[in-house]
Length: 74
Image (cartoon, rainbow, N blue to C red; front, side, top):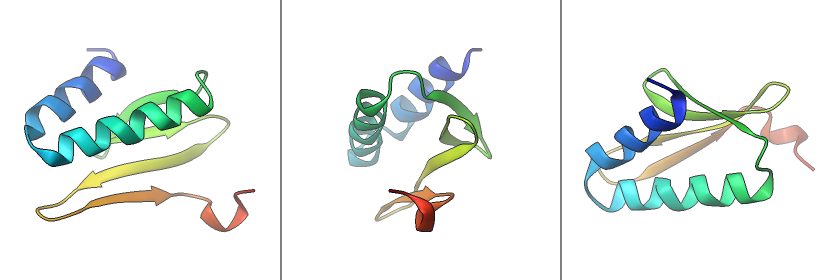
């Protein structure tokens, strides 16, 4: 299955506020740069372009956004 479809399934399977939040985060990321590549790595959505940018993780009571090079972001 292609990565975009895997992320769609990941979001759908959450079936609660976490899926809605990750969907909103995904939309913002892709609006910033539509050429960013989506992948499902480590069982979580990951976005990259010339290297890893960020990943989202869902937990019982919160969503985590991991910026791989956060300190060097403009």
